[in-house]
Amino acid sequence: MKNYINIKNKIAPFYKKIEVSGDKSISIRCVLLASQAIGKSKIYNLLESEDVINSLKSIKKLGIDYKKTNNYYEINGLGINGFNSSKNLKINAGNSGTLARLILGLLVNFKKEVTLLGDKSLSARDFSRVTEPLRMFGATIKSTKSKLPVKIIGSEFLRPVKYFEKLGSAQCKSAIMLASLKSPGITEIKAKKSRNHTEILFKNLKIPIKIKKTKSFDYFTIKGETNFKKFDYHIPGDISSSSFFIVLTLLSDKSELLIKNININNSRTGIIKILNKMNAKIKFKNKKIYKGELISDIYIKSVKNLKGINCPENLNSSAIDEFLVIFLVAAKAKGVSTFKNLTELNKKESPRLDIAIKFLKMIGIKVLRKNDSIKIFGKPNIKLSKVYNIKNFKKDHRVFMMSCIAALSFGGEWNIFDKDSINSSFPNFLKITKQLGARIY
Image (cartoon, rainbow, N blue to C red; front, side):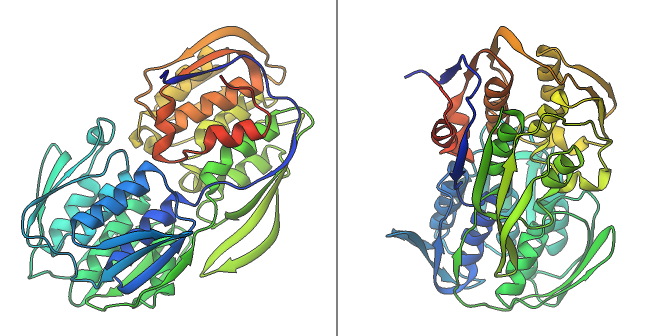
């Protein structure tokens, strides 16, 4: 069975209403926290992607039972000290940096040796950002050059820590927060602004956490060794998954789209703020609060007069997973778009900044780079007619999906390889794209 798709035609105008899969960040966090709760938690609309399935398999290896019942997953948590195994374990996180880094935080008091593995892409990524603070709690962690495989043996004599998270990494911050559950006393964290799903879940689950926010940093104090009860959670749609259809609508002719029930947490809506600065006029409808998270429908209409942007750096962390498709909008916008300090882009599943620059130049867009900042010179009348083969992108799911949006928006004939890459985050991507009228072979 072929592992590539072929696109020969731009998408026709569409007027549709869709729903996307459950939020991946919240799905993984709910699985891990349900494993630490006491009792049977019910998780509805859990994203059934490889990353989340690997999360379920991981807690199963650690002695936590789960089952799928009708339209929810039931996870039988055994409390903050409930992990158990009679032997040393190997846990494979696949492609998921979120799972790999967060589960290390839960293993700081697990007495058996656990070897954490990942696929080729994940094994090339830096883990020092979590192994260094987790060693401070007292866990023994071994790795070569701070890469996977990582071996961890937890300690029964944990100590709380004081840590300054300087990278704006939600994964690093969350790993420390999860480790703090296992440690006596008060853990204190000063963290550069990043996604805040973990702290919202902590508050919702009545885990003892205090939060103080300033313009640039968040300060947390967490009281450890406090068990919490089972919970039910209906996971909203994923804004990162929605971003591909948001951009497809903007770049298509005479099209309108309503995406239902999406998490619009302020730490995730950088793409909306950036695109609206580019004249997109995206609107939120039917807003509501669910367990501390802001949920809304998102309305998008195609735009002809997109304009370039000098992107504010303070929006980087809240759009870090969406920059690939934001760059496509910049490619069609009038004028020059400037994006600064995108260091974190090259620390994802693939070196995304490097790949994006190569991709934009391939389709005839002028790009200037200085260190980790770029300028994109837009072509409002961009129309492609060549044949493009997209391969060798380290099977990065977002590169695959970005390539599909470019093909459907700009024309040309495209052969896009490694379609299985989307299974890690958004297995229904091609199905929904076809529902909008795309012809994909």
